[in-house]
Image (cartoon, rainbow, N blue to C red; front, top):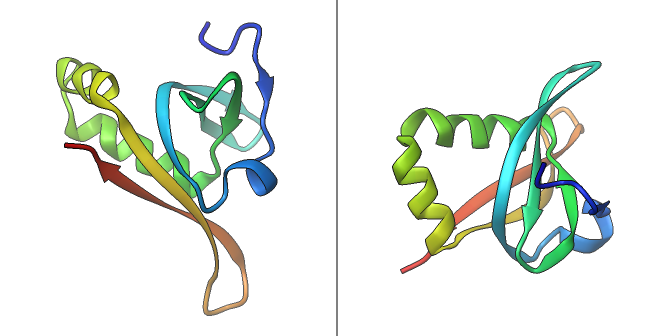
Length: 102
């Protein structure tokens, strides 16, 4: 529902390397399994799809927080930054770093 009326934003050009704030997120099932979909406060008319690494980070967050804690965190501002990295075996991947706000 939070994706309705919004357009997909290109992660590569628009959000890599920027500190962004989660407005809401949820999961969709695709051909390769479940993945996270994130709406951003900085881009209210758009959403992004998360890679497997980003999806796992949000799922870990879900397991560590109760629903009330998650709602409070989103209300206070859950910020993160995506960074492109290359692994030791030369594979590109996207790293996510969460930045808790005061």
